[in-house]
Image (tube, rainbow, N blue to C red; front, side, top):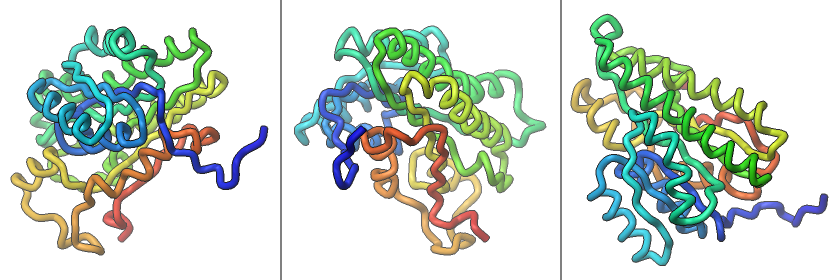
Length: 257
C-alpha cells in the first residue's frame, strides 16, 4: 500500500458523523471541529433548543449539520439513533461518544436511581450506540471511526465524590480496548480521549461544589476544549488508519505530580 508524504490527511469530506452530548461543552466544540473538516454532523442531546443553535452556528460557518434529540439514558433511543441519522443524512462512518454525567455524591450516598442513571449514560449508551454503528459498517463492509470520551478519572481518582464517575470512565477505557480488538478485522477503529480538567458545563458544576482546583496543577489552569481539536480530528481522519485501541490522555500535566 502506497501512502503520501506526509500521510497526514485530516479531511472528512463526504462522511457522516454523530456526536452525542453536543448541546454544550466538549460536544459542542467537537461537532464544530468535525464540520469544519468537511463532515456532515448529526448533533445529539436532550436539549433541542441548544442543538438548533449549534446547527445554526455550524451552517453559518459553511458546514453541514442536523439536530437529533437523544436521551442517552434510554436504551431504545440509543439503539435507534444510528439508523435515524442514516435515514436522514446517509450512512454514518464516524461516532464520537461524548455524552456523560457526574455522580456528585460519595459512594455510600448514591441511591439506585442515580447509580443506574450514571452507568446508563456513561457506560451503556456508548456501548449500545457503538454496536449499532458497527453492525451497519460490518454489513456494508465500510470502515469507520469511533472515538469514546473517557476521562483521566479512569486512571486518577482525586476523591471529592466522583467514585462512580471514575468507575464508569474506566469501563469506557476497557470497552475501547476490547471493541478495537473485536472490530479491527472490519477496519473499524475504536479509540478514546481521556481529558483531565477541562472547561465545560460539567466542570462548572464541580467547581461550584468544591471550589478552585487549579492551584494544585503544575500550570495552574483548566484546559480549553480547543486544545483537543487536533487529537479528535486525527482519530477521526484517514491519517489514523493504523491507530486503534489507543487511549490518548490530555491533561496538561495536571496529574503528573
